[in-house]
Length: 101
Image 1 (cartoon, rainbow, N blue to C red):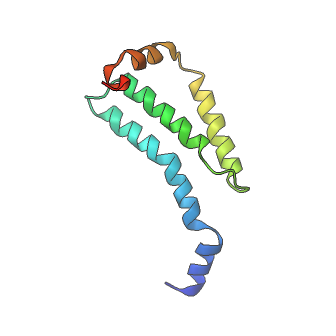
Image 2 (cartoon, rainbow, N blue to C red):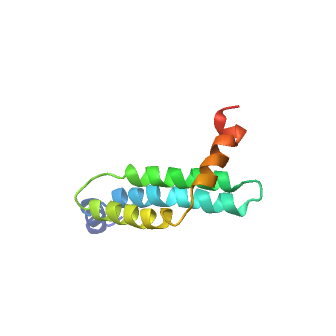
Image 3 (cartoon, rainbow, N blue to C red):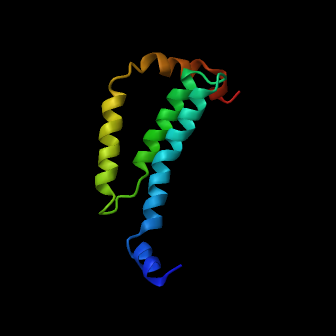
């Protein structure tokens, strides 16, 4: 690889930024793939949304990433408020797989 390109990628923290985008997109990808399968139910979807929220919470509080983190949390909270989560919490509690049996 050209030294100039390597320096640009290294100093712009390109690979670090790609890793952070992966942290955000991985739970979304898993959620979409689960929804496409017929063997998953809405409780699984709810659980994946919780994992997505955790991934946003675990994003680093770096100077350049705090804006991205805040935007992700703001958008997620806006969509989360549209859900009536009580039936999903009940399904999560009742479902035997999530109780460790």
